[in-house]
Image 1 (spheres, one colour):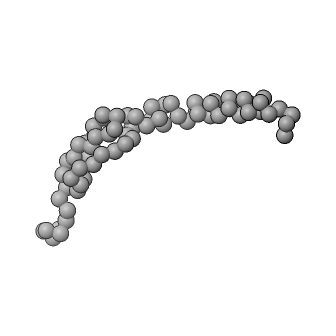
Image 2 (cartoon, helix red, strand yellow):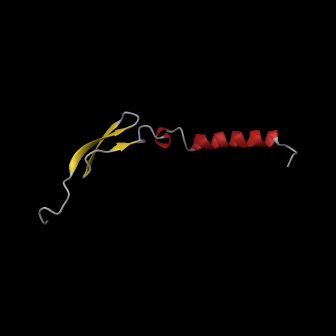
Image 3 (spheres, helix red, strand yellow):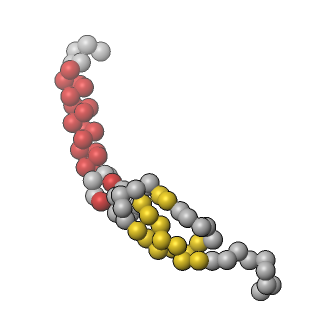
Amino acid sequence: MKKGIHPEMRLLTVRCACGAEHKIWTTKEQLKIDVCSNCHPLYKGSGGASLIVDTEGRVQKFKKKFEGKY
């Protein structure tokens, strides 16, 4: 490799808005993120299948409210 043309890689601690810290290799000086695997709903299990259940309840509520009006 040629010397002096490649950016310097450094081990950086990334801090999420939830307070979690992750170590990554990067060329950046500082990196802040809003969502990580510790606080994202799909990683925590509060999204996905449970979201479909909520949607079904909303659709049924809508149909009951407007039954016979459309």
